[in-house]
Image (cartoon, rainbow, N blue to C red; front, side, top):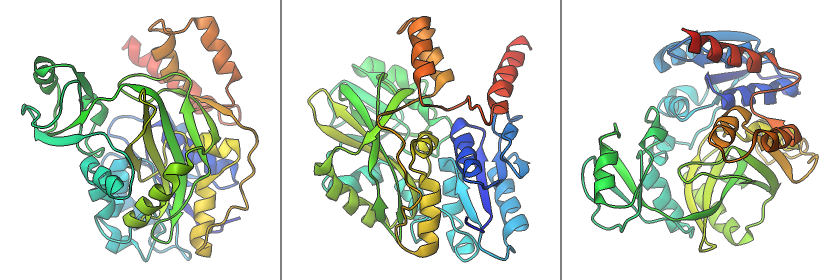
Length: 375
């Protein structure tokens, strides 16, 4: 058992809930700094939380972290569960590096820089990974190098509601119409590649980029604009990409858990999209599958070498579902019947909201959503 305190610097999202459950099921009750401008609806109800601090800004959360935990007898682990929080810690790297263990890239501001999509895709290209053609333009500007169809994206995932900037544009008129709904001043335009599947690789790094990854997740259902919500974990199966991935992480100098995102085109080729320098929503499912990446990373950091003693894969493939989002997307839109969906849901090995051992967040989230509709 790790004796260090764990502090989860969280947003009110099921990916944060997954981190808390990963720790709780490992016998660790974390303190939680919950950043939410509005009244939280989910995370605070987990039975695994030892102490909860609700803050309404990143600045308030950072002050809480320093005021409450800087004088612990052993360095606490601080786990960021969103890009905004990770960027906040990264931009205070010099102040925090001797007081906390947290995700970092050995240099203040380096992770935040790599969160800019054009920066990380150029790094990936240099390391030998295939990338879609991309271009950064000002909002309203036409593409100078891409042919339609084009995908629009926010240039960095630290932008609030960045997913609202994703549009598929088949011609100039559609691009200009998309600009009316995009809030950011700079826009990333990307070659639109018709996809066959999606591929996520979860793992962790220590010592400035030494990477560990042995599993991947793919999807039973996908959508054109974003990742699917019903997936399965299996053994990593792209050895031709492995050395390029390892080169990329060595160039990042990163230490922490990560998610690599790829798209498999209908041409059969695998395209690198981005790295999440933090936990993804799938992290909890990997832990339930038998690969507790958070605990493996923490022990590896303390021992200064890759430690895998906690890994014990239960079964593969391992089915997982974001059940609330998938119900809205798959059933309410008519993609699958309620009966088929219920069979898939009950047959899944892991769910993002419902958890028999920690059920209150699920029921309180539904209650809060229902009560919100009545107001």
